Length: 252
Ligand code: 13P
Image (cartoon, rainbow, N blue to C red; front, top):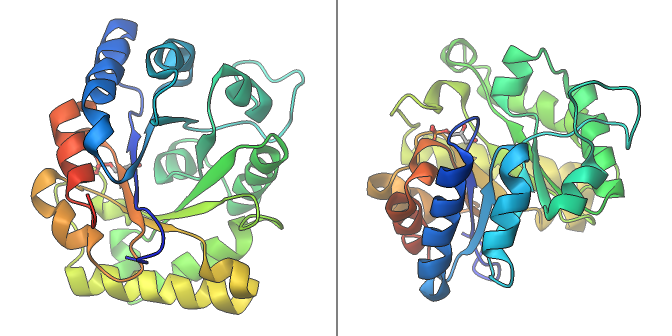
């Protein structure tokens, strides 16, 4: 943890829940969030953002999207733009999640264009990167994330409040995580890459860890050097678990 900066605990709700469940989850978080020291962010399915924004209005819990189109508007059936997310109440957007990279064939060049659109709309991009199990087994984890970082990060990312999320693909939804030493090593590596490529601005970019973060492992993960918070999937769908993770953060 970088002691000067509040940890960010973000929930990626993915394509889960009904409108009623989204409202109920947001309301439960709102009721309990006051005593939590970590900064909290929830990223519901886009169609639920306006309702969740209504429930969270006036609270300290921030809202984010899970993806955006690189264009501000246009003939793009089914897509949602960064200004639309902003309009609906989001201040962050998750980009380049491995589920989008693999299920929608998103390249790092496309992720970079989306991050540029997010910054232009005043959204803070949360840029996801991470290696597959085969890449880690082949000793290529650092090479893979370094390339994703170099190819996905746009100009102005740090100044626009950009956040990195290291999510090893094999740890997502699997109940498996890298060891504490492996997480610390990768976050240290990412910090050195950010410093080398982006100087002082790169030194301040928060680096979240994501992949099977649960109440039981959150304290150990969030205490590691250069871990600036967590991006939580499954456990963010239960208010109790999400709040327990947030409370496990240093200072929480
Ligand atoms: P899980 O926490 O369910 O492993 O998901 C992590 C994730 O993909 C967050 O973006």
